[in-house]
Length: 311
Image 1: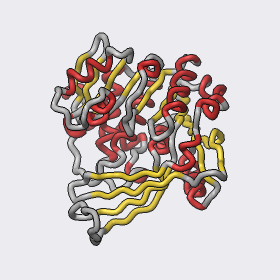
Image 2: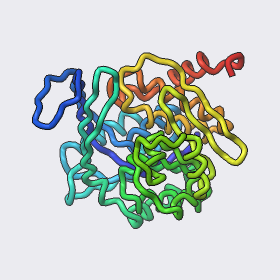
Image 3: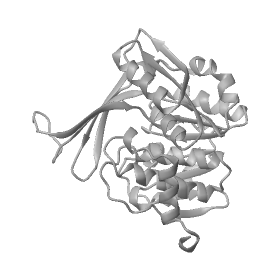
Image 4: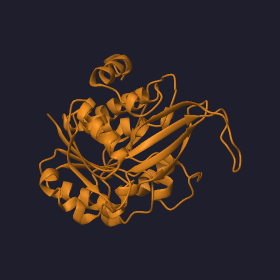
C-alpha cells in the first residue's frame, strides 16, 4: 500500500450558493448552505485515503469545537492523524466559500492554527516523512513549513508534490526539492510574478517555470485538461466531460489522484489521466469532501473515458 504524508492545512469550510456575486454593502439571499471540513492539505489526505493509500496528515489545530470536526473526519476516512498538533494560541482554521450558479467560486480564509507551522514543526515528523513513498504539501501553510516538507521528503527518497495553492512568490531553492509542481493557470502566472490574467501563453510560462529547477510541471486547466512538461514530455491530457455542480474540490481531487497513481507505479501520463478523472468527479457534487471520489468511482470514470481505443 502506498504511504503518503501530506504536510498541509485543515480548515472548516462554510459554503453558500448565490445567483450573483455580491458587491460591498449588498445582502443577498443564498441557498445550499454546507458546513464541513476543508483545507487543501486535509482534503488531499482524505482524497488519497479514499483512493486506497495509507495517508497521514501533518497539521495544526486549535483547541476548540472546530477541531472536533477534523477528529471525526479522520476517524471515519481512515486518515492517520497522529501527526496533528493542538494549540491554544490560535483557533482552528476556517474559510467562507461563495458559489454562483455556474459552479464558480471565491474563497476567504483565516488559516488560524495552520499559521503556526514552521520548519521545526515539520522536523518533528521527520521519521514519518522518511518512511513515505509520496510527500505532498500546499501553500495554505507558511512557505517555511512547505519548504521543509519538500526538503525532508526528497532527502528521505520520497517523491515530492507541491500544489502551490494559494499561489505566492517562491524561492528557486524550494523548487530544487519538488519533483512535481501542480499549479492551475492562475497560480502559474502568480508564481512567475505576473498578474493572474496575464496573456502570455500557458505553455510558454510553464516552460519558463521548469527552467527554475523543477523536474515536472503539470498545469491544471479545468475543462481544458492538464499540460504536462518534463525533459521528455510535452503533452496535453484531456479532462472527462461531466455536469459541473461545484469546482471547489477539483484541484485537491486531481492532486490526490496524481499522488496515488504515481505511488502505485503508473507512468506519468497515465497518472495524470487518472488525476483528471478524480478532478472531474469532484466537480459533480456540492462540497469538497462529498465530491472526492472513492477508488471505485475514480476507476469507473477512468475506464469510461480512457479505454485503449480512446488513448
